[in-house]
Figure 1 (spheres, rainbow, N blue to C red):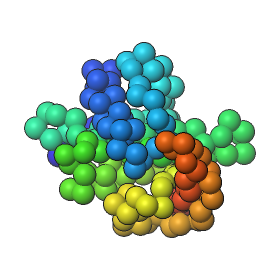
Figure 2 (figure 1 turned 45 degrees about the vertical axis):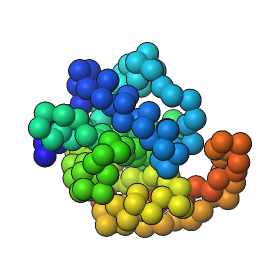
Figure 3 (figure 1 turned 90 degrees about the vertical axis):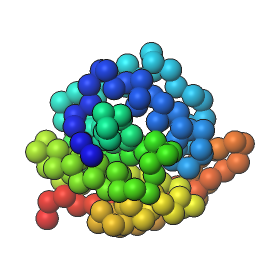
Figure 4 (figure 1 turned 60 degrees about the vertical axis):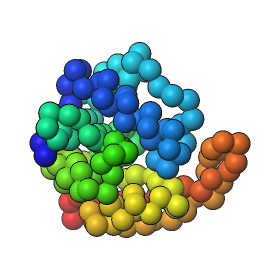
Length: 163
């Protein structure tokens, strides 16, 4: 497996994997499928310290992860919000773990002292990945969002990168 910085040529694969996460209803509160215009704008916002990494197997992108702004307030400049998406045919095979390891190194190089992420309490596979990578549960936001017309809870997790 090769993990590298994402390039524009990866956007169709990133889009496919992101839309799988939307369809599968296990990784995001997003409900509307995304298109290339959305993905291009998103990618433009992920330059510099807000990196996007992709994982390749046999030259095929099978997962991606990104550091996203946590807040626009300068007090939170060292906190990155993470996204991790794995192609549905490759989940549970260690790809997410490798992406998180490499993203942590990128985060440290770019002055992040902490990563946070938000996951569904029912996403056991995701929570296992995050715990294995050293994240801890901070708490549960009850009725944090709507998914398919129903309230869902969201679990907040964090990892300190620098003590």
